[in-house]
Amino acid sequence: MNPAEVVDEIERVFSEKGHRSYGEHVTELQHGLQCATFATQAGENPFVVAACLLHDYGHLLHDLGEDIANQGVDARHERIGANRLQDWFPAEVVEPIRLHAASKRYLCWKEAAYFDGLSEASRKSLALQGGPMNDAEAATFEAGPHFDLAVRVRRYDDMGKVPDMVTPELAHFRPMLESLVRTA
Image (tube, rainbow, N blue to C red; front, side, top):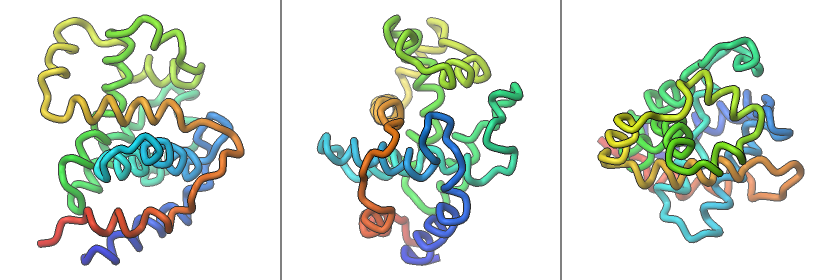
């Protein structure tokens, strides 16, 4: 697939399933757009902005329902999304997506106040994802090559829960996404 076809596919999936509830009074599409907008406003590089936009893409690829955490199920959406996107984007985009749930576990280990600031929905998913990291897990996580990018994406993930926030449309991010698509 060429870059335009890749982004067409991403837009199709968001068009068909982006209306699903994210669980924080925003839709999946609104959440992604908010995260990408916050990253853009902070002056982040295109890899981080793209990862913010697409970090929950895996939620759109499974058909387990919108309230799976309430049913005690971890869909491992971060892996589903990263596995699909890795054929199209470089590791600087894909690995922060793969690691954004682990980043929440890490930040709960690293910063006591971080856990206190999590919403009820985030606490539920944290429990399903293994809870806060232990010292050994955190040391391994910190040693990873995409550790810093993943934590930055996580911070924007936490911000993207603002009902009625005005953001650019998905099409606004299209040129950036196309520029990041790996070509054969």
